[in-house]
Length: 276
Image (cartoon, rainbow, N blue to C red; front, top):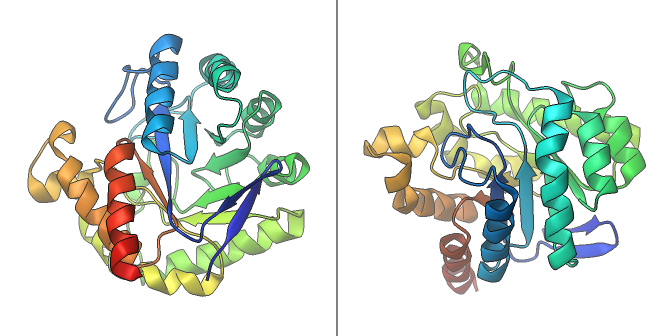
């Protein structure tokens, strides 16, 4: 099934998989924490990712690594808004996603030119989120997680992981539809309230989520499911990331969310040649 999503009038076709570049403007993200906290560094990284073929830049102002607490809305806005504004001043055609669980941040980021909302709680943390996204008329990325980043690894008990994640998405997609959100993208939430073994179980069963009829985003870039398995650091986890991304593509992933755009774009080229 081929999809397209409407990003404030710019149509993104998902006929071939796309790459979303991660831009964490935070001091404490799990892999690149602090590297792009300064606006100039963030803009230079966005430029690099766009030149390497990123279709979307995902700007996040709050780290969601395990154990982290939620920061104030004011602090989050101070981190993300100047970066979004500056990227779009230089690259007005860029598609920017705002990675947030706060409706106010989503609204203000879209006001500055972002054209997609990425919420790790799928609209469950902020009661206003789904209503806000519907009013903004932008695509919504709904991720699966139990609990919040500060306690998510206490919630790894499942009777049937794949069935529970599937049911979660069915409910969230219905809620989005009820609110009037046109474009919903699902993200299985690798690493969020899941053990290493559960992450691979999810990876093996990604294809089953195609039955939901929504495009699927996969974000495994340099995560612990790769680092722990290969016994490497985040810096050494690029090869493993590419391997897992390729497996995800064969299972129907439509968007790869990555730190390393060039390598993901190359993986998609190889996958397309293999598929066609």
